[in-house]
Amino acid sequence: MLRTPEILRRTGGKPVKSIIFDEATIAARVEELGAEITEAYSDGDLLVLGLLKGSFIFLSDLVRKIERPIQVDFLVASSYGEAKVSSGSIRLLYDPETRLEGKHILLVEDIIDTGKTLQRLMALLGTRKPVSLAICALLDKQLAVEPCPELRFVGFRAPPAFLVGYGLDHAENYRHLPFIADLE
Ligand code: IMP
Ligand code: MG
Image 1 (cartoon, rainbow, N blue to C red):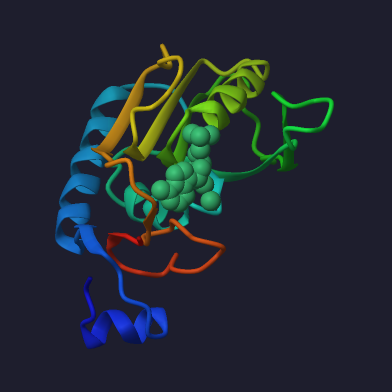
Image 2: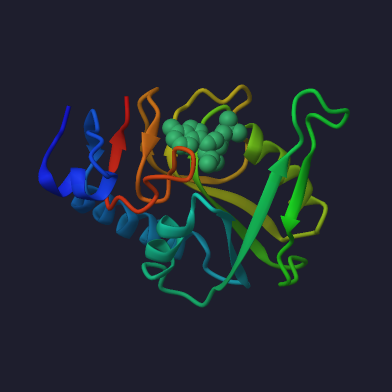
């Protein structure tokens, strides 16, 4: 358990188990991802779509490392509960105002666990006639049932633990931690 004064000040006295990715490690990888994305899109309009809320810190760092014209918008999605009729579908609570048709879409997500959230969103966004649809996830737990066939950019393989910080929350807490930590 880590109980440094810096951590305890930020968490309100709760220790974290360990820091999985520190600030410098994250910053270096985000810079590389920005370069990969810049390289991958040689022409056309690129719309970077951040999935709220988890992607907000990652997205803000990432877009500043992309060295080509882009547009930025956000999505807020909500899955229907398992018990409800439409389980397996996803509902957009905020739908991007920017047109998707005819653009390269890069969907930015904090972490892929089962991959279900992304699978559903990709299916939905695919109906909007983008030129291409790709994923950029900071973390991938690699438990995805079906590997997504689409182009994807991944920051780090994540351990099968519950992670918080750098946008990731536990019950809306810890999003502001500048590093990614294992909570348990
Ligand atoms: P999936 O649909 O199973 O891939 O779940 C992805 C979503 O679950 C992410 O967007 C996160 O909001 C949340 N999530 C999955 N693993 C973690 C974690 O370790 N910490 C915080 N949130 C997580
Ligand atoms: Mg979340």
